[in-house]
Image 1: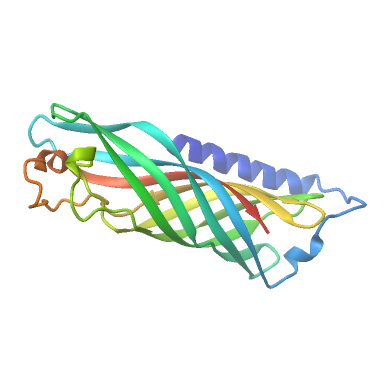
Image 2 (image 1 turned 90 degrees about the vertical axis):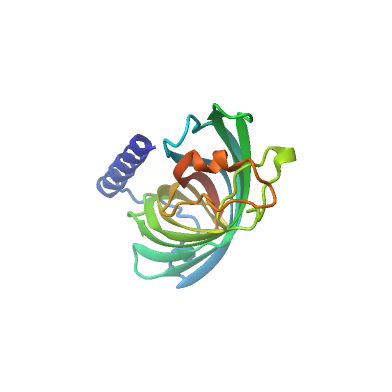
Length: 234
């Protein structure tokens, strides 16, 4: 993930530098008024891949790792506040749906599925390079507060749900994208990395379902990671 992030940043910087050197006027520039509005709105659709960074505790023989990835999807609303010609503040509340699987060794159940429905409340700062004809690359970064409305209060052994996640988490977010100016609206494609800053695993024992403590005891700490490819319509 770190390697992908470095590549993404290098490509974004190169694109920005190239657009400033190679700018040429075009006879028809689509939808210019959107960048002049002090506040504009839109909506966003996206696909995501949720992941865990798992740190094993070393207690007993059990080991945990995530090796199975399942695609999810995201929907949301775009609100963009213009701060400067190249800067804007963005608030994109929405929902993120996804699933992650933890694989265990030396325990009875080898795979535990964890589903999440996240209420996403990000506040992001967007820096845009100079517009080149009808596209404009940008970088984006900030923080997000997420609420998992799918988090369970108790285990569900019948469905192999043997770990629980905490309800809230704070994420650092960084990404890059390109604005495409079409005749009647602006379409942005964006790749963003979100890294959870808190231990997301609920380590409290479920007294109503004893005997499954080993699944949480095997993990010392677990952080959430999400990669999202978004399409913003503004």
